[in-house]
Length: 540
Picture 1 (cartoon, one colour):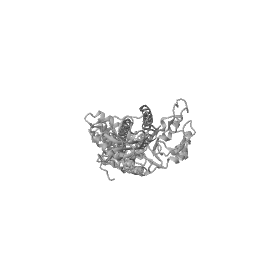
Picture 2: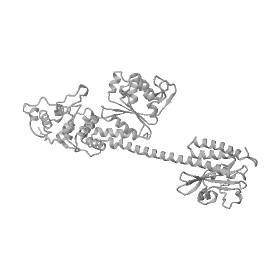
Picture 3: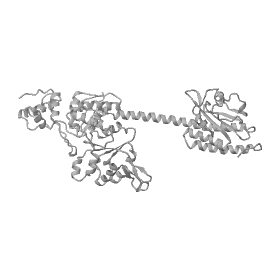
Picture 4: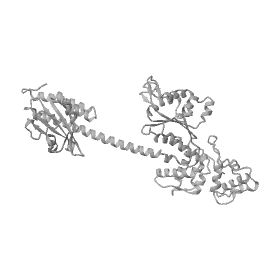
């Protein structure tokens, strides 16, 4: 509607009200600044009869204004807007920045401050420029345009109208600033969490141990982390399979994406399918909404399937398709979903025997067993116990907020344990002992073992907890060197074990391999004890 000289203020206000409604809707539907500013100037041109619009925003580092948006039919003006800058007091736009007040010019042609840098404005039309101020009253930008309807009668009203729009723009800039700050905080927190996670699951925290078996395992982990190869972690419970899986992910190219865990033994088959593949709304009783499964959550990342040997043969077929094709359907759905997921699986079962017995699919076995990594039980690397104790005490001490230490006798006692629970049991044992050690120094009297037999001890584990013993009593010793006699002599807490080792060596003719078999030890374990207990080996 074009206002002529007979138009009333009421008609002008009605038009401005409609324009304000459209601009408010425009500014609230998107947080993308530049498109929103362009749309505001377009509305002013088409709906408010205010052409040649310009919005300049303040650059706080350079203390000048740069052109953020213009509305013109000229492509040259659009290309030039990014290069235009205005210092304080420079031209009409710079004058508004300096004075922090509105500027109304009935005749632009007679204004000496007009620089016409963008070749945007028409000399025959008036000019209105208003400051955009933040909540502190500081100018953060300038809004300018040229009214085309009855310019001589309604300049004051049009200036007030532009000030209203400038206030809306100020609110948008404030909101965007808060969103940007929050996003920066979230980014900083994310980066900090990533640094912590990388530190927690870094190779330096995983590579505790120096035995040849562990060194080979560490090298395997380091190499496989670089690729997307499927990994099968094999080892007893408590050997650290989940820790290794985490280290593989967080040291891989997928580290910035999700690491999703699922214990396959913790869920029945019907729930396992929904948990892995997700379900559609109404797929079953209680499915009140569509839910993503673990495969979707792990897309572009890593999925750790613990206890993979526990899943049923029927579900193994469903899992095989996903591993081969990278496709599946949610429960109750018919839409095929494609994902790119790296699989790290773990089991403590003998999968080869499970395949021979028909309990595990052979094709799934070969699909999972691309890169097997065997995690040795702690009893096979007993030489690593002192190093593990140091590492775990540092970890426990940080959680308790105090330094922790351990006596040599306590370390030697830990090295006589069978450790059926492996590193997990060792950590739990140390944590219990640290609670008993009020002064922060753990002694052998602070230990309580719940699940395995000490060398020379009388504790008998339950059938489900039986593990290979490191040194059970030797029953075929010479009569004059019985264990009863050894136990009754000496105040040295290590004397019983030392005499056991000597007695076994005597009976074996000082052949260490034979003595190790008598004590149910490995040759490496008995050699370690000979060294640490200062046993002089006899030459027969």
